[in-house]
Length: 223
Image (cartoon, rainbow, N blue to C red):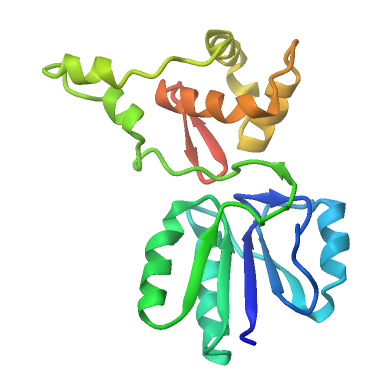
């Protein structure tokens, strides 16, 4: 049976368990960002059962796509040692997809999944696409004045309490959350607190509205 490698982009997806994965069937590598210092105990406990077939790899340095390049390197290294190996990248980052298409053409079996099947997830997306890779909604907001009909057709309604969040961020200045993680925690302190499911919609609306942009997991505010 070919070796199966599960490569977890822990900056992007933070699973709290390994779902249905079983020791002896998978080799697991968890890639951790330079500034990430905590891993969920449930995940650590399950990885421990994999023994030498599980490892944590904390990347050196930070910056746009730094962790992605580490995963790409290890795919090449492991594929050279085990030509029949199969790889699964766990990440919501679609930036991996061109790499996967390329290595598939080279005969390396590789695919991407947004989550580990059956696994619980502690926190959703930690790393988002940069503003340069704008969504259709963002492009609609920046459409030229000569095409008002298209701009109106693509307009996306702001989530509830969006203006409240914008006004509070504007009043905080230097004390504003500097990372996706701290923004999540900050929204959790609202009264009433934002539900987990509301966070992604609020983050996307803030980017779409031009209030902030993401550089990896860091937040850069417009003003």
